[in-house]
Image (cartoon, rainbow, N blue to C red):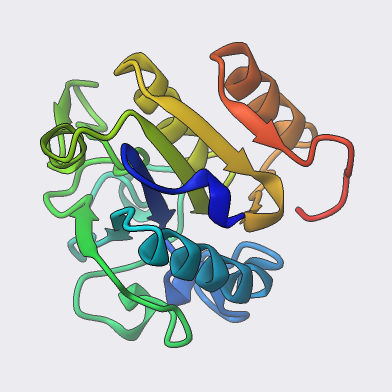
Length: 203
């Protein structure tokens, strides 16, 4: 694990928040809590090798078309300032936290947000932070594999970055049967190095 970090490599930890990763959270991803210890080990490996760590955090307003209450597909979750929006208490935080969805946009990718009505996309600061640090490779972990992890990995590839995804360090929502496999296929097709494909378990 430690050998993948060093100059030019960053770790991106996606949305390890109470609403997603704690049983009873408003948009709980099954098994989300199980990856926190492994993600902490990954964070320790990155920081000890001098690699930067970035975190994303959904930070939605109470009213947004992202939510099913206003035409979206998701129950209200990670509303700014609420306990559900907080990063998991056991998560090691050792880098910048980048909030997304703050203005009511869909905040799937760590690199971009999208207006849920017009589809217009705009960038977060993650891309410029990585460029400023001469990062060419990112390791992505966190929640959820078929949404925010997927979109972050695809955006990173579109920016020309090399991407590694350890499957053991993500879990999948799977709103529809086969979403996990379709997400993995999209990432592999985009050139993401997906580790752990031999094992079906975990999500």
